[in-house]
Length: 182
Image 1 (cartoon, rainbow, N blue to C red):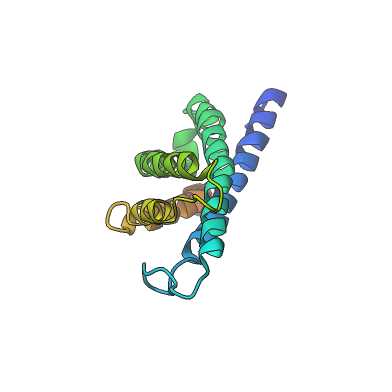
Image 2 (cartoon, rainbow, N blue to C red):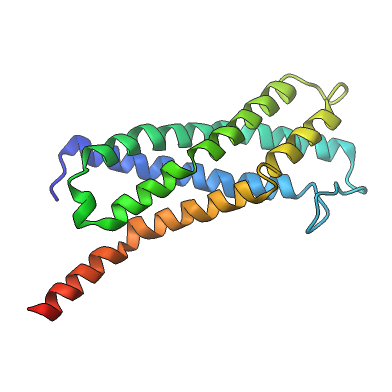
């Protein structure tokens, strides 16, 4: 497959936006779950209020990067994916990886909705009038989306998509199968 210079740049931008987005998800998960007692959705009672507010503020501010990375991934990656439909049969991993990303768009959009709500809630709040309880409730809603399985399953789906895009097991099978039948 020969790619034009513009397509190579688009592929590079897709990869960078995917790295920013997935990396941001992992960082934000670490930030968000730092507020809870391990293995529960109970907030740490001994964590100072100022630390809770700062953690929620960081969680909200870092969402800009994940939302931007996701938007760029969908726009540029979607364009590349759809413009190479002819390769879907030859490279099944390309089709499967793209479909896994497409399947989780609704969950990601719902999480982005909660992220935007969090940004609007805490963006201009000072520590004196920080809406701590409202921000905590919003974080719990975001985490428990689809009974808590939504964000976890979407992350597994995205990691599976990366696996299929990189390893392309169906392409390897066809190469081995063609060699065996020759």
